[in-house]
Image 1: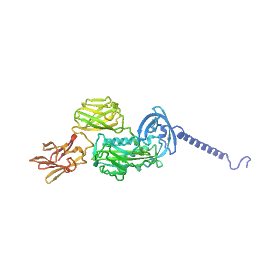
Image 2: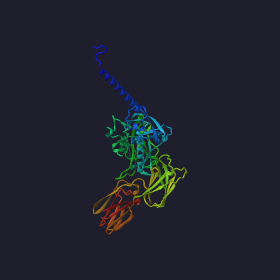
Image 3: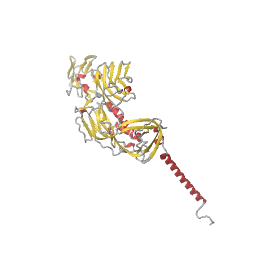
Image 4: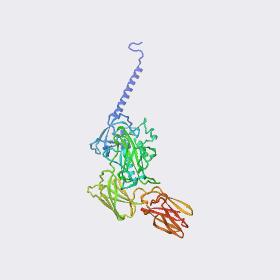
Length: 537
């Protein structure tokens, strides 16, 4: 053995040791740099838009404000801040600003995100409570869409109060409408996420995250239109009877008039969620009889339940307008109520008269507007002089008002406030008219034309209905009032109408009888507002 050398050591082994140390230092450096890059340095909105985080991660986001929005909710006022980004994904992120602080586009904004594990309809979602867009923005948007849809359906369900979370909902209709209670039912449904989404790439390690949350709420949106996929918690088969299956859903006819109308209440007896990290959604539906294309009237309330009760917004007002005065030359609509104390600037008002195949528009920013093409003037009257359109104010239409139409009221940003169905010589029509079909059969030598109607509508009384009949180009009955009994007698045959249930209405099961040579021809049934049913046989 040579002097000065230790056994088992060679220059090659020393070189490998040095390389191992260098690799370890490199890995440590990369780890430190990665940690600094992801967690210690301020991130941009583009950085977080494409990065998965775990519960417990804390990161700082900094950037330039591009937009500031404000939401007034049952949990207080929320300031929502958007930051400038270079990607489409970054545009979707909206952060919650500090309460009481004022923000402006162009200012710098800095926020610390604390990523946590949340439950949304029993699906795990990892996000930060400071990212408003991944928790409440899409559910609130869905609530707004469903409210607008329900208002068009004739029945809006508004919270009993906007000052605090509540599970009591009050009926609010566009035109002080009312509907027979026995024709309506109500359901309380639990929203559930379809398991087909619970797989990569949408779900990672069994959870959703702030990147894939849009898929979670997209499924939520689709489920709203498919109530058969939801779990039914309670059901009231007949609102007149009012009995529910288990008491979770309660209905109260507030004025005890036997009609579903303004002020009636639905109470939802569900517990608050267990904590701030648990969000559960429900759907309250009120349904009337349905036809092939529409229902008599319907409404629903999308409920976002949280730790202190439902999370709801109160930024979208609706108006209740009633006909105060009506002729074929002058129509006065009065604002009777608002869905909450709304502040609608008079100068933002827009009006549209929708006819069968066309419409006329009116810009009321100056208080009045003359539509020369239709010869109609629209005027907004601010009777209390506060420059707002609110309770007690009126809309006045003058000119040729002899055509059936729907009068829509909007704001300048195309947010619908209300609508009124106008029918000359009748007035406002509540709800949609039913489908009318017929059967054709010969019994004991007479032609029987049976009437089938999806539901009975109050407008369809016999006194509001006329009938015409033409046989071999000869008009035998010309717009005669429809009544129970003989309508025509002659040498060629007889025509009669049978009100089968003797309710004075054109309803399901009623029928016409034609005898002699009058067993072919064209029968026209004319309802109010030029609604015509033509039967040829």
